[in-house]
Figure 1: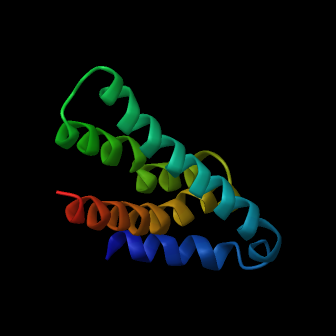
Figure 2: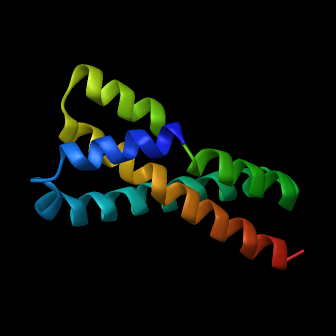
Length: 107
C-alpha cells in the first residue's frame, strides 16, 4: 500500500509533465527492464548454470528497487526525476509476473 501511495503522489506531482514525459519514460523503463531480465538470464546461461538459477537471476536483475529510486529522486532532485521510478514500480510488477507465468508453463 505504501508504494501505491508513493506512486500516486509522484503522478499527482507530475500532472502537467505527464503528457510530454510519460511515453518516453515508459519506453525507457520497459527497455531497461527487458535488458536487465535478458542479461540476467543469459550471463548465468553462459556460465552453465541450471535453468532455475538463470530464471531467478533474471527476475532479480530485472526487478530493481524502484521505491528507493523514487525516494532518492524526491530528496535530491525533483518530482519529474522521480517519475521513472514510479512508472518502473508498476511496470516491473507486470513484466515480472508475466515472465514468471510464462516460465511456469515451460517446466
